[in-house]
Image (spheres, rainbow, N blue to C red):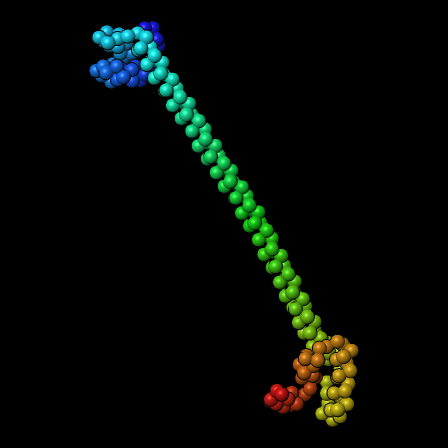
Length: 185
């Protein structure tokens, strides 16, 4: 009988239901105990066994619920860990991609810089060619002048494709205009 006083209220509600007793949800433990003891079919041994089974079932449900909560917590932690790992992997990939992009930018800039330096060398040479080769005088022989220009251009390492632009700068304006009007071919 003392076991009823120590029991939980919800356990006593289940016990009263099992014993087919009418009760109110607002009843206290003491009134439930009195209701169960004062029932016509009260058998202390049977009631004690039913009560202990009810308590064991409740404890088993609570334990199962606790285990499920732990499993869910573990699943959530594993999912979060996977997400963190994936984020780290994505961050690492992003750093690699940014590194490759910066590497390509530097390579492109260095190539552009090399091209620009070649152009500036050519531009520099266009200005400097007049120091090494005098301007053509219409009174001189053009064949001799062109031979001299060819040798100086080779000595200065001027690309053949740039010879015309250098030569035009050294010829008198009238001759340059005549050459400029000629169709390429």
